[in-house]
Image (cartoon, rainbow, N blue to C red; front, side, top):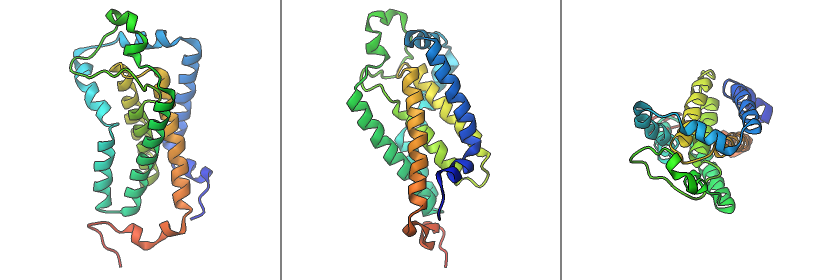
Length: 220
């Protein structure tokens, strides 16, 4: 399959176009306001309901979620499962490498002298190091791209984008990451996943009929 990058972006257009608009708006916000301004503005909006659901939303960006989803998809189609699982593996590894190279402080450490001003959700473990990029956000946006590409109805990309946005916001809401971490994580997840799909779809071995089988689906 001789897909181009342009072909892939067209297939995920219901995700990609609104994502580009959102990314542009986020970059404008970043240019207009400081890290502290953005962090404390987000940190000031808390209520019991969002404190309760934010940890569950953030869990969507856990690797375990993608592993379980990939296993379920593998019951019906190995190709789709491999695209999703592979995109997670590659983006997660890259995110960890970048995290440890940059080793940026997280909000709790960065604003250590202003802890009394900060709000933390009870019961959530707050980390101090390896802030950039947000790994959960990388995973969420990577999965959103892969799932949009694999979906028969491409308009599902809008829903996948909304879920990924919620995951990214939850990382800031829980004081685990900065605005920049989430923006960078989203871009890493999107860009690397598009190239991962491009790489796979151009490999001859990946076009075999066996890839369209699943643990529960056998094709002659």
